[in-house]
Amino acid sequence: MLFVCNATKILRCRAWEFELLQHAAAPRWVDPLFRFSAAIVTAWFVTRTTQALYYNLHGNAYQQFILVLLVLSESISLISIIVARQPVIRDVNPAYMVLTIVASFIVPLFISVRGNTALVPPLVGDIASVICVLWIIYAKLSLGRSFGLLAAKRVIKIKGAYNFVRHPIYAGYFSMYVVFLVTNYDTVNLAIILLHCCMQIMRALREEAVLMADASYQDYCRSVPYRFVYGIV
Image: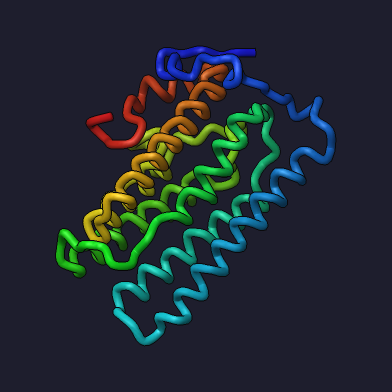
């Protein structure tokens, strides 16, 4: 079944058609499998970030604080995945699932921080990074138990960070990418981050298309017209 809205006309192709699975009709193993797989990978990210914090204990104080916030952010993701509500509807299109896995866990691994050019003073980058991660944490807490990696309908959130833009978590990560680029500029990093942003935008549009089946979400879109940047887009 294909839900089409103006925002997702670019997604029309046979391989990208929606395969929506009603929770009541889903095999019992579907949700535990998705939840367990996402939790394992997210736990690995938490571990890697914690290790980075440990090795940087005697480093820059701002960078230590950023790593503490990143550990907290990824820990919130992990807990949210474990305690997330059962979805009423879940999109299980194979092409979309592959996109989600690649965008969430694989593409970021190719970003480099060595031998790059800083376009702004380190202190400016550190302060901007702190602000971005704090926003991401706020957005994740605002989403609460409706958190999930695959497009699904749980409880629609309209408060907290969702008062400002419809995709505050993506907005936070996009802001982090900008800060990262101006502190670690490299043409390869630029290409990878542009690719990653395009993939994440496709995911956001996919999520909206699934939720558009709910009249309350349509009302929410009218009241909050901005997807990623308040007052702009």
